[in-house]
Each structure stands twice: as structure tokens, then as C-alpha cells.
Amino acid sequence: MTATLAEVVRLLDRRYPPRTAESWDRVGLVAGDPAQPVRKVLFAVDPVATVVEEALDWGADLIVTHHPLLLRGVHTVAATEFKGALVHRLILAGCALYTAHTNADAATDGVADQLADLLGLVDSRPLVPEEADAAVGLGRVGELDPPLSLRALAERVAAVLPATAQGIRYAGPDDGLVRTVAVLGGSGDSLFDQVRASGADAYVTSDLRHHPASELRERAEFEGGTPYLIDTAHFASEWPWLPGAERALIDDLAAHGTTVETRVSTRRTDPWTGRVPSPSEGPTP
View (cartoon, helix red, strand yellow):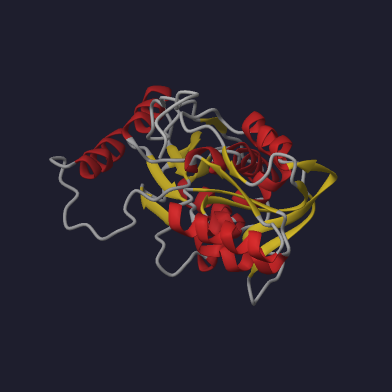
């Protein structure tokens, strides 16, 4: 049996309840006819042109992305501008678009859980639990068994995440001992207070800015040395959710007697394309 888009959306909404999305977020069905059949589903981090091209070349009926296409208000979806052009291409090809963003961040087996599992954390719990359900929420905090040095943990992060031009940056001593780790896929410096309160020895996240990171490390050195920081590319920290979301949809549809062909996008949509490493001996700042 073939599922309809309405049935697939219902299952996705059950996995990633829209009510758990942040108030500023825009999640759910972006384009598509609820009555249309869904035989092929492509999973990707970003709803960008190269992903749409991949989906249409493959004949996908639905793209499930983590990041929204229409997060902020728009006044036109005319094909004369880049977002409107993508919407037109999707509609003309009969391909739907669905977004699970901060609701997928918070969900059980969502973005944070998949990242924590990939790094080998045990006994993980939400970094910022929901009031209504302490089992879900933003980020995760878990334990390394056995503990690792900060350098070894950064090397593990680099080994398990998709390669990007940025690579992995870290702040703290190479031999700093890490037992408890907090993780958050995507931009994470807004949760520094919660990371400190969690007792984490290291925090793995993305998009760390100079001033917040500098102040956190200065305060940490003053108070005892931790938490250390590990900074990844935004795309890389959220990509691990895709294979898990793919498996979950296959299982959920199978439980209802329907099947679907799925694929995780092979396109790297991190916006940075190159990096020039600093020379070993550069100018003195």
C-alpha cells in the first residue's frame, strides 16, 4: 500500500510534535497536497536548490528537512526570487516539503539524542527539559564511559560527523579530563548557563561566537576550569538526525501496512567551501 502525504505528515507530527517547537519557529508541511501519494522520501538538513535538484532527479514525492525554508515572513513566492523559485519547482514537480526543526531538536530520538548516541554518551537526559515532559527538551547531557581527554573527544567528534571546511575547534587543555558531556545540534551559545548548571565537563555544539565563548572560558578558568568547548559546523552537528529519522519513518509506515522508499541526501549543504590553515609561524598579534 502507498501512503498519502496526509498520513506521512501525521506520523512525522507524532514523532516531532509541532507544539514542542520554539515559539519563533515554523515547522510542518510547507508545500504539498495532503491527498497526493508518497512513494519516495528524501531527508536533508537544508531546503536549498541542490537538495531540491537531488530530490527531483530521484523522483521524490516528499522532502523532509531540518531547517525551514520560510522561517521569516515573506511577501511573495514569485519565481523571480530564490525561495519562490524553489517553491515553484516543488509544486510543478508534485514534490512536497515538510520541516521538523526545533521540535526535532527536542524530540526523543531527535537531533540531540542522535548526536549524543553517536558520541557514545550513556545515561543521557535533556539539557533543558520541557516542563510538561522531562524526557524531552533541548540538548542532552550524558556520560563518557570511560572518560576521555578533551583532545580525544574532539578527535571522536571529528571522526563521527560529516567532514566540513571548518573542521572541529576546541577550547581548553588537550589533556583536560572529560566525563560529563552536554551536546546541542546547531547554534548553542544561548544555553551556556544551562551547560554550567548541568555540571558538564565539555559542551559540543555549533556556531560559537568570540565574545560568549571567551567569557565562558574566562569564567570557567576562574571557577575551576570547565566546561571546555567543542565547536562544530552547524550542518555537521545536525546531520546525524537524518538516518534516524529515515529509519523511524520506515518503521512507522510499516506498522500501518504501508511502505516507502527513502534516501538521505548526499549533498553537503554546509555553506563554507574552503579553509586556509594558519602558517606555523605567523605575525605576532
